[in-house]
Length: 273
Length: 273
Image 1 (cartoon, chains in turn cyan, orange):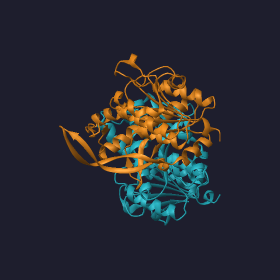
Image 2 (image 1 turned 120 degrees about the horizontal axis):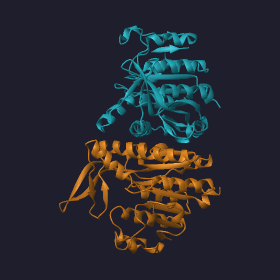
Image 3 (image 1 turned 180 degrees about the horizontal axis):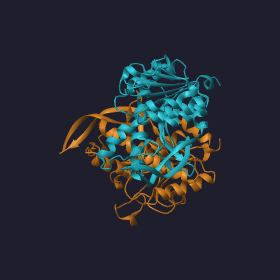
Image 4 (image 1 turned 60 degrees about the horizontal axis):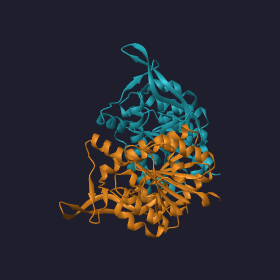
């Protein structure tokens, strides 16, 4: 089928400043022009706000290798699902439906689209010491069950996907959305993976936006990890996994205004190829 | 296809006391025995709790004809989506996945499964006077787009459906879950519709559980409205709509313990036929 040749996976983050109306308008125009697209989204910023408001503030841990992630106890997981699968996912589906796109929103639990191993404990650096924290509901996407995604695309529905994923035992686990999108792009043999957030791309001297790195050679992605701050690290890691898995282009693009998807496809942002 | 002959639609409410583990265990056993089922759920009680916790307490209005409904401004709609589509829907999907059932959770917005007219204003009785309140995001399901539901069932997925619905313009609208389930049962020509809640069935003298009405003749459902309190009124209305639409049996059953679906199918509760 032709969508296997030209599929685009668009991941839009969950940080402050992202213009979801602009993303959806651009997406709808591309979709109506016949471009097969899957949207994957985050919801981190809003999850933090709701968790604070509900009296269960977010807790972030830093691994010994320097990656920051959300510690996801059961109560946090439920708040995470409320925001990612409820407010964010249905908000995006509603925007697309209003634009005449027959969108269908699903989490990685649904049809086990995203599957991985449940990591119950996490090693975290606290006050210079490495501690082991238990009761975590996290993991990494190891399998993408593309049957359901293909079924929906084939019937004319635009899939809008979000964490959590399912563990092999069927338990909900918090997974990184960028790396989930990368795994999806590989599994679908997508032509391009767009990782859109609230910065113009990878910056050599964050937060100086004039220091944008326009291109990264595909065989040298990991050496650019040194320029990545915080959440951008996982995007660079996701990009490395996607190009290693056969995705032709990964683009770090700006979702704050304009036509974010068209701009990224047209060469704006940081292109990995 | 044979599932058109023997389809069962199970609606489980969102009030205190419902045992979702028991509902899912029973559902999984039936599904694995080959019984085609669709689950529809509510989330009213939990929505009230989360709305209170977020400082936007629920507001209920009573229509001049005596029906109580949630006044759904935009902020309430987002809380509603967080609870119904996030916490409740993914909690049920997770339970089923853990039991080995490949469930897929969707709202009425997704693929516009449930569609209806957006009612922006509602007539409400306050202090004995009828007022018109604007800014409401509610409606009634007028169309069920069964294509997506059939696509999922045909591919072996168990659909888990929830309000909100989509307006004809694609806007999210709060709709009554019991009547949505009734419309779905009619559209699928279901053999049975089960409306499970935290009471044994329709009671002649609520809350006296020994006053259970075991059977209601299908041609006389509306005359039993006098026995229905609050939310039970919409269940009786949904039952009337379902039997008028050709559903053979509607059962008001108890979801607080045991094997709620098997018990209802076996004759417990109030049967409308």
